[in-house]
Amino acid sequence: MRQKIVHEGIRFVFPFFLLTIFWQTRFSFLGTYHVYDYHIPYVYFSTVLILILIALSMFIDKHWITKSWKCDEIMVVMTALFFVVAGVGIVTQAIDQIAGWYRLITIIIFSRFVLWLWLHKNMYSVSYIMKYISLGLIPLVVLGVVQVLLGHTLGIKIIGEWSFSASNLGVANVTLFGFKTLRAYATFPHPNVFGAVMAIFSLYWANQWIERSDFFVDKWTRFVPYFLGIFFVGMILSFSLTAWIAFFAGAVFYVPRMWQKGSMRFNGGWSVIVFVFGLLFVSGLSYALVRLFSVDALSLTRRMALNDVAVRMFLDHPIFGVGLNQSILLVSSYWNTAFLPQFVQPTHNAWLLMLSEVGILGMVLIVATGYQIIVRRFLILPTFVRAMWVAIFVMTISDHYLVTLQSGLLLLFLTIGITLRYDVRSETT
Image (cartoon, rainbow, N blue to C red):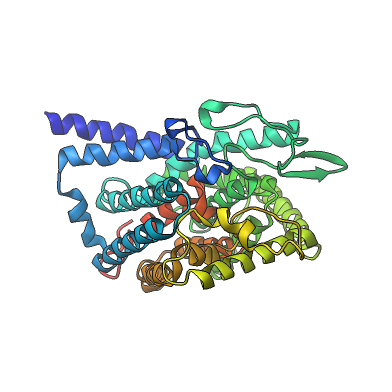
């Protein structure tokens, strides 16, 4: 009887988690305050739901975690070693121990969730997961559209949307037709993160559109182009150059398949959808190219300076790095103020950022784990998963959110969880 109740609990909590996964609902643990948000040990609603899922699974089977190690024993060992190395780095190097352990504990929880996803692969397919997350993202896209039109947020704090406008200092904005307005934030901490999520889900639905939705029953097939159109609009309204380039880079994998299906028929509503999609695609590509060749010189210089800071941090702390979540505290110590006024943000290249924070030992384990998860499986991965990883790689080169922010980490670990569904021994979806 107890197990039946717990099973029903999981059947309720998991889809609810998927629907709300990118809400930024949070509160500061014990009221702790830091100058930088990156250091505040926020308790996120999404993390709480993950912990509930893990706890419920423990009631059913106390040994589920050890059973889940079978998904990839080598990956599990290397991940555990990374936790040890990162922990040693925090203990021996970190200036802010709370911030360091907060980041590491978050990564551990998300890693456990990846194992949970693998263990429940027969209960929840990839299509189920992506469908429910997509349904939850649609209201966020609508919210982003409203923000762009109004030039300010609505302040719906229950879903993690905070109050600010295009005139606030430090807020990401854009000028359209002479009118200054917000870039779409939705509930995300920055439009670039919103754009990244939109790009990844646009790639997924583009694949379903091209493949005629092999993973869906008939009643869902007709909604595929609408999902694609909605998320593509969201990506455009983020005005994130990185997200746009990442999407186009991932979409390269679809060109051969589109060529094979070049005789697709578009009638009625399909014609309208294709026309709108094509118009947005051309407009977005044109805007991206204009921005690409007229990059803000100051922004580019700052990014290069932050990369230099990360390299010098690594050279001073080559073995264990400066500790997870610590590099932003040391920027002022390494910044060359004679060259450029100080700009305190995490290094925007995720690879250099992690190198500076976990050192050569941690970085070797990250690369080795990445090889085990992605490269070893790459040829057997579905086209959309390969496209997603190419897009993610592009994002990591020019921004940090996939390894520093809750929503970015969720997107990264969700992609890992999907990838582990496919193995040389089994290609379960």
